[in-house]
Length: 201
Image 1 (cartoon, rainbow, N blue to C red):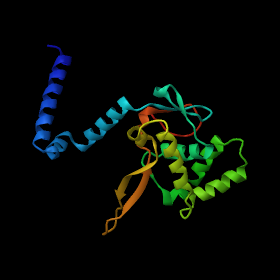
Image 2: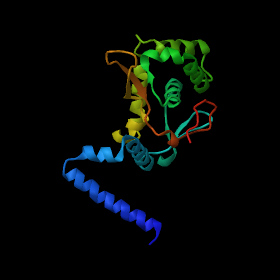
Image 3: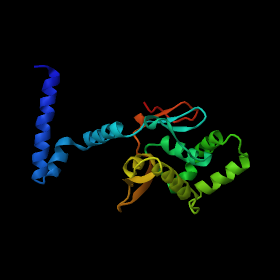
Image 4: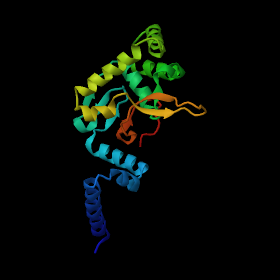
């Protein structure tokens, strides 16, 4: 018996056990057995099988590789915002965008090379102002574009959303950081451009 055949047998046995636990209403035991780290790994694997790779070209075109290189058509400011959040998989709080002002400005300068610098700076002022609605408007537009290209489930991985929150340390009360993130596995992202987006694998 080959090792591969043994693995297939194990998978078949596991499938049977999973079905039995589900039928018994004991998904709590199933989660305990799998563990959260493995669950996250399985989510990434599932995403890799169903989502398109995103490739960013040297001239900052956003292409969905596995959808026939279909372009995600965004304005330079939207691209700059998207690049910022791609570069920070840990998430960013909207109210702390001012901390990323220089980085956001750098992305905007790269995606809007022909735009007047004063206009770029003015636009950045709006984006990082916590009392301004500009960042919400830009994220809404990004969401709208992805939804025009794919179904809602797939789009949820590409948009900037509020799935991540962390308890604040050092307080007797429970506070949460309301982080905005792009949940697309970074292994599915590649970049030919000069933006410092880290190693996506």
